[in-house]
Length: 418
Image 1 (tube, rainbow, N blue to C red):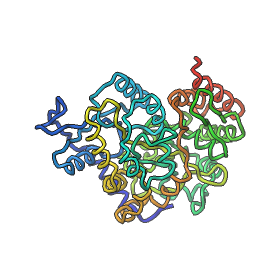
Image 2: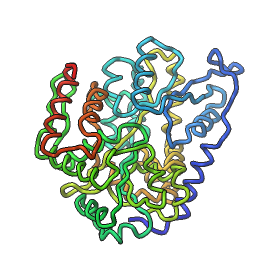
Image 3: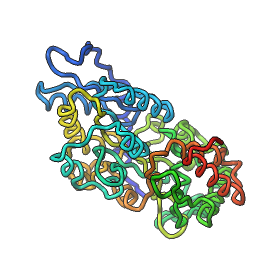
Image 4: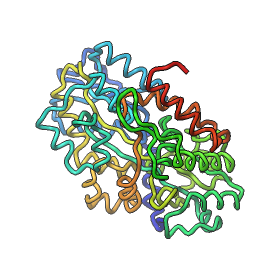
């Protein structure tokens, strides 16, 4: 648990609020140039990162070689995925850089929608990166996107809630203790879902925490481990989560509900610390590692990389820009301003991060023991199958759900209609 950092937390939240209210740049960039300077269009989804500030900083550093303009991708995961597939498959050359969810890396690489990373950049992009973040940025054989941020989910609470629930937060909190404590206080456990992947990521982490795997293998017939002791242990916890509420499961409104008068516990990525919804309760925020299923905390870890589309017209400039956006300076600013954990482990050694990122002693070990979603080109289908069989969380049956879900995932990967 972390205490005595209210001033830092308030500063982080105020920075996020300022970023949200900042005026956009309305300069005309039609034709890909502005006053003779090549304009690179960076397509990125809604995020707690101030992408406009990072783009501006790298534009200034480029000193006229290029200018980066931020273009929005849809907030909804399925819509974002569909838009990217549609445009990149149509040989669209209007995209110079894209922010790619780690969950989609293998699919986009397998479909040959991404430009290859130049040989001279593979080592710099991989230098100092957490091992799991490096795997999440690869297609199983080689690096295909530049690792950027890599966020673990944490357990958050307000004020003395954990103490009143009878939790000893000096040690890793067991799931059963958290659920018992929430029932004792008659409060729910909110789960943040900023990108639409929280429920599948939660199931994946719970199964991993119980010693199993949801899916292993990139082909049409992978090994699936849902109908197992680990799957039933995960289902039992999800069912209890549904019992204590909210029974509909993860939600993008979770931070707002957590900040309300009745809010008590929240499971959310590290970047939630700068969510504007938490501005009013920033001084009361406390956090610890993600709850433990067995012996070790295995948190859902969500991340993103920066990629260059195959038909980007100026891929050399795109990669120059990505080198800036993933530089130690950019990652430092991203961590301090947004609360994201950088994919680069060496970012944690920066004196400014040590001073201004109070989450470090929890997030740094969490990304090394956490679980990313399976590496498969069929993740959107797997995700859909998991969502359809594990939601609402209040309807999960530990005896039936794991078997139903395994069959749904197997059919989805094999291409069979439900």
